[in-house]
Image (spheres, rainbow, N blue to C red):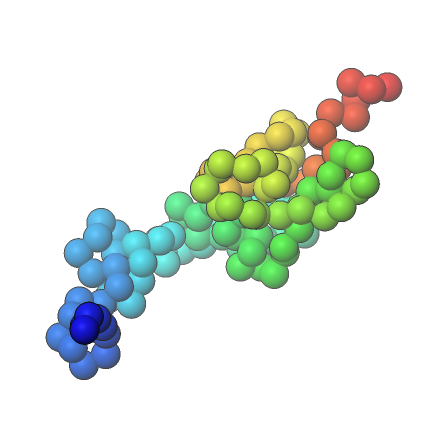
Length: 125
């Protein structure tokens, strides 16, 4: 017989998620600093972000799940892997296309726009 021991954090005396991690504290996972936030714009609308938060994370937190369309069929895309391995989260940031929003930290005053296709329509004119 194989016994599996399940460890729970509630009432087990175990450490809370994020405890002992740099920037982490009980109840957090060491993610974005919960200090003063700031705004950047997405397609002309203000989006709140926290210091250290990626553009993709801030857009997700704001309820935006798609910020790119595919080249061939114009299908909506957003974050897929969240670690920079794929290219579904491409966005145009401050006029520069093809930025992986999951890797780019949000900065105050950034201008992020939906990327249509390959983001370089001006090359095809």
